[in-house]
Amino acid sequence: MSLTQEQIEKLSKNLSKINVNSGKIAHDINWILDYIDLLNEVDTTWVIPTVSVIETENILREDIQGSKNITRAELLACSNQKVIADQIAISNIMK
Image 1 (cartoon, rainbow, N blue to C red):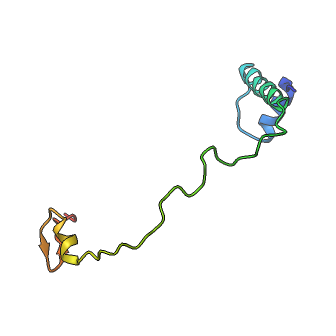
Image 2 (image 1 turned 90 degrees about the horizontal axis):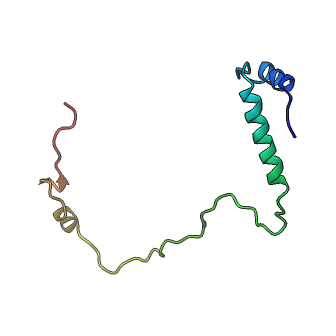
Image 3 (image 1 turned 120 degrees about the vertical axis):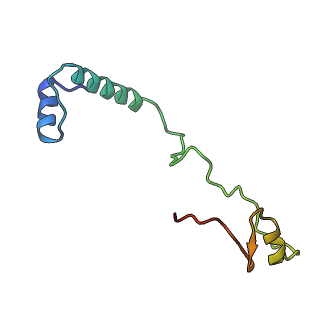
């Protein structure tokens, strides 16, 4: 399947703002259409359709509630920042 220069000019006037003054656009569009025709010749009878090439199975671990309860003081102790009134103090960000 290929398009003539007339067909490309008609498409450019009616559907888009492509500048078709050069013959390169016709060559490129015809090359793309030829490639699509080539892809249509491939037998995909036994190919499973996919939406993504990445497996979408849940690969994360199960959420298991731990038996150890962490206290607020232990969590705050993990911070390098100064702790004031059980909250981590940060410098003023609104200057």
